[in-house]
Length: 223
Image (cartoon, rainbow, N blue to C red; front, side, top):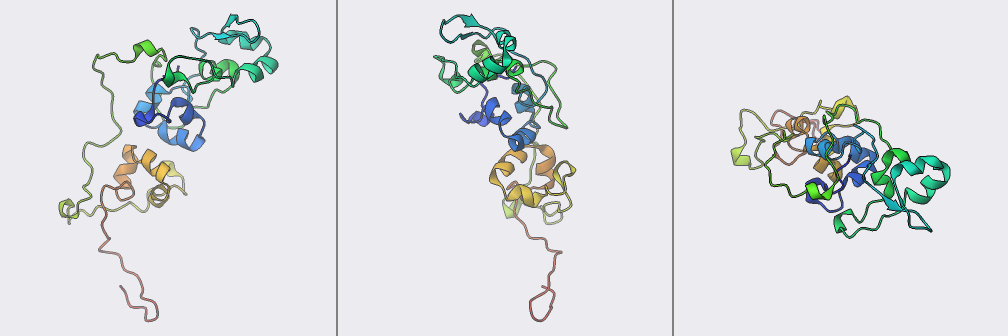
C-alpha cells in the first residue's frame, strides 16, 4: 500500500497521489529509494486495495469496503472512486476513495523501468507514523559532490557536465535537458547517476571548459 501520510521532501503537496498523477514525475521520482519505499503502488510495484478501509454508502450510510465496488463497476466506480472521504486528519484530507481502493477503481500503474521495488510495502495506517525506532535506508545522493565554490574545485579534474550522458539512454534527456527544467532538475539531481554526470546542471559547481574553443564571427579566429 502507498503510505498516504508520506510527503516527498516534506512538501505538503507532494504526496504519493501527486507522484502517481504525473507520468514524468512518476518516472523520475520512483528512482529515489525513499519514494519507491513509501509509494510502491504509485511506482507500479504492486496494486492492492486497503482491506481495512471503509466508506459510507450514498443514501443509507452503510459502511462499505473496496470489494463492494467490483459488484457493479460501471456505476459504482464512477459514483465513488473520485469521491473525497471525510476525515478529521488533515494530512489525509486530499485523498479520494480510489487512493484506498486502486485495484477496485482500476488505477493500477505499470512498474517504472529500472527501479528496485521494496520486498514489502509500508502501511498507510497513521498510527505507525511517529515511531521513534531508528531506521536506515540507502541514499541515492553521493556522500561527496563537487563544491560550487571555484576555489575548492580541483584544477586537475574540472567539474564539467558529461556532454555525452543521456538519462536512461534516452537521446533527448541530456544534462542540458535536465538543467533547463527546474522541476526535472530538482527531481533527477537526487539520482546518483545524474549528479555524477551532470554536476553543473545540479548546481554542484560552475566551471568553463578550458579546452573548448570556438570561431569568432567575421574572422574565424579560434577563441
